[in-house]
Amino acid sequence: MNMNMDTNTLSDHDSLIHAEGSATPHVPLPGILPLANKKAADRQKEKADTPRQIMLGLFFGVIFGFLLQKGGVGKYEVLLGALFLTDFTVMKIMLTAIATGMIGIFSLHALGLVELHVKPTRYAANIIGGLIFGVGFGLLGYCPGTGTAALGQGNFDAIAGVLGLLAGSYLYAETSDFLEATVLKWGNRGKITLPELVGARRTIFILWFVPLLATILYLLETFFPMAR
Image 1 (spheres, rainbow, N blue to C red):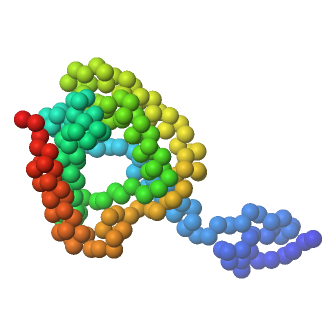
Image 2 (tube, helix red, strand yellow):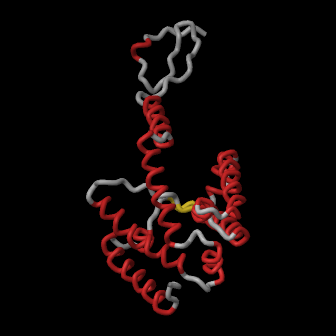
Image 3 (spheres, one colour):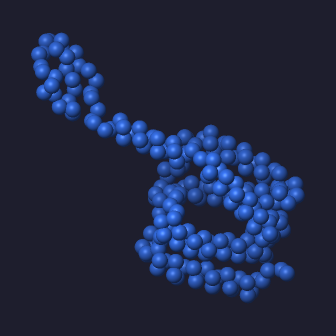
């Protein structure tokens, strides 16, 4: 069937129809493709690490490893003591890091000097990953960070853990599409923080949470002092 229509009268939301009656594919709304391309470019930009980011990561990674080693958490007996609740060195270091990190990061964010990159809370992934982490920690006696520090100080029993870390990272990368479509969707709460979870302003939350951590640290040091 022949249809004679002035294509200039067609809106951008309709399909274009040729004079001979053949229809062309639907014309997308203006700005949709550029917007999609921009989002894809933004995602690619977020994934790509600049040389500056790599150097900063290396710099702070070396500092982190040095402090782990000096704190004594690169020692097999200290880490196993944390699991048996006979040595609280690891807990003390973690609580100190959480308190100082909370004050520092939120203060820098309030001053506009840093951006927060909150990881999504995914119950299934967090629970399953935590169980796998715990089993590996118990079997090896090291976690990824402390295992690397232990290897750096000459503990060759940590080699198996470092190799497992590399193998696990590769396996996760290869199965990431499958995990995104399954496990990572189960119990996905999105990007939430503790202040948002309890419905408190960040400043108010920090003012009572940091003293709580300090109190726990004081009690641990009082009743379970570090070995001198």
